[in-house]
Length: 267
Image (cartoon, rainbow, N blue to C red):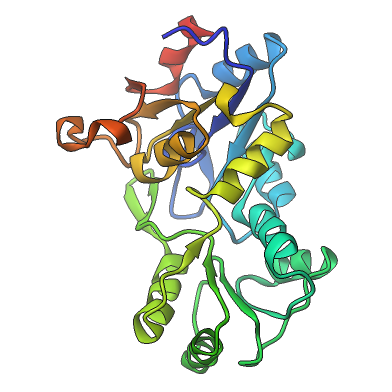
């Protein structure tokens, strides 16, 4: 595949550029650093969009740098960024109940999002949570039944680590609220239109001129399709054993590679 006409690159992180261990430290996959440096040398922008929602983007980027992946703060997006954008567009100044870390709650408050812990919430946002209180789940469910939209950073099973699938506790939490309220969660991470808008804004390039690279056909490749982007499936993570023959043609990627190092000749 030729990528010389692509003007901006969107990468997934876990399972695509790095694998994480149980301590959440990451190890760059073969070719990951070389691909990032080659794109930068070509003068084109790139952004990493992770569905990880327990840290600020800047904290996330700093951790990746410490582990050897040379990503800048402004090259990292998370669902917290796209969620704040969604709330500003659709629910400005409305109180939000957040399932998430203190760091994420603090970020949202600094960005002007009013937070509440009552069923008077006019939106419920589920990010990553290590533990969940049943009373909080019931409060959120009451708010949703009253009409508050249920927003979730991630509604997939999880992400790929060094020893296989790491389950998404955020998705588990959102699923619990969705079950009792019979309300379908609105995904504000990958894949979603608001995530497409976030990557386009950060890159300064229309999504039709992006290449989206990731290991999850239901998140990364779906995100690319939403934006009309070029899509590349990496088999170093979630989709390692996926049989594409069983996938409808409109959901398939434009190219499939075993690892990101195979992109180097295309750049």
